[in-house]
Length: 333
Image (cartoon, rainbow, N blue to C red):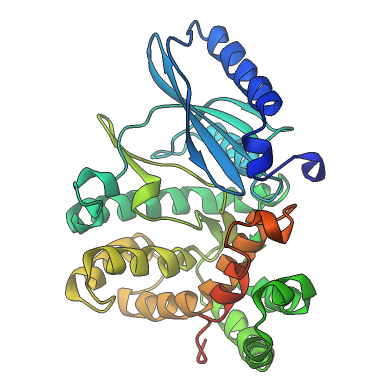
């Protein structure tokens, strides 16, 4: 059960927890005839997850542990594995009960390929990634609802109004953020959000998996091409919801506005995967509507990430859910 999964930096830095986790890593590596050959480095530490870099006799491996909110990542990856979906970094081993995963090293991230950390400047690379990612989404749409049965959250357009209502009614979120005025403004938009969600659901684009956090740190570039990892924010959603994270991230890293011709070309390259359903100009309009509603799902992802944490363990992210919701456009339709 996810409510028994520990979380927080106090867990990730606890010697007993670390010993148990690394013992599991060593046992799983031994199953595939590999052994640890050097010092293990705790390379990543947040309130909701941690990752270890593990040198082995056959190259670097990585392990990951998460708190209860993103614990469905392992079952989601198992579903993608069963259907042989391309361009995904799959685990070598998984312990779903403890939300532990073990991966092969997938190569450098797209963002790290440029020394100043702005590898998102490679718009041709991003075009390949977004076309491949659209292929993932089209492949998954036929069985997307199966993911709901293994705990992947439902942020489909017909659910966004209820999702917003739940976030607005959660007193803990707003007590942490101290944002009563923003909360009142968002309450006034609930009817608009419900209407926008209904319109988006009727647009004819099937729901599928949305990675939820597709940016340059979550794309690995290896010898065999690119692979996407870190699916802990993924949901079953309108596919174009993805663009609400990806395009603003690329814009920030490159210094381009989201309306720049290069970014519009990226958007259209991605949308071309659905031109068998609707013409491109109509798809662009649908995408704009999905992007406007995207902060609701993103805010819910933040709240899942913070699940099980006391406010003092959130390390400065106390207001992340409320701050993200305040990005909801006054005109979501």
